[in-house]
Length: 258
Image (cartoon, rainbow, N blue to C red; front, side, top):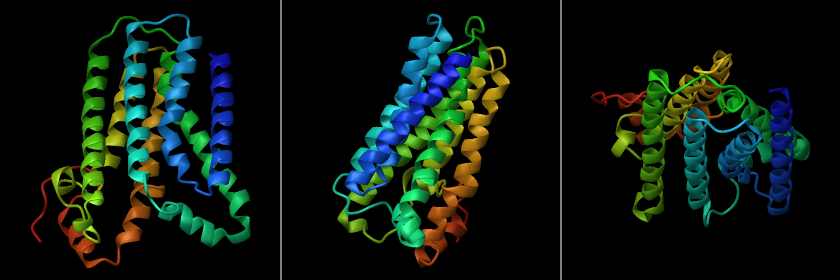
């Protein structure tokens, strides 16, 4: 397992540095968002290639990660098509950090996300280095939870993209479809599907270490770079404040009365 861990760390390091170079040329650090899913695809393919053969669990988890990573990368590519300038997060950092932006950005955007990627990949690394017998009920439960998460993330992203592409919705708040049940259904889906991957990894020796993956994703989305940044961006808009009063922030639930 040690060789795969070191290889994975090296692959991620080279990958995020290449992305960083492209971002410097294009002056757009939002490229890292699109590269996020592609990094997981790369790790999955490399570790499957290095594994001592394929089994049903490795094929199952590998397929789930490839589907998730491919869809996410495609979605971000379509979302950013024709967009002028950087995403508001990176633009704010560029203005706030001033002359230290390039140094701080390298470590906080690329090296930090590379480290997070390595830790979130733990279910993949464990399953592709250890065997745990035939598929069982825990794999089935993990798959079911992954499907729930993938549904909310994929459908939420699709509905929001269509909403944003319609000029008639400019300045409005998305409150339809799954966005009627949660202010951040795509983040809920992202967090949920990694819990599914964790359950699948529990079937191999030492699989409990995969817990770091969903816990880290949850912490980031709930308290760091996910929900807090978006909520702060829209906090001064009356329609969004009404949305906050009536709609769950994370877990999907029926809207409350105004």
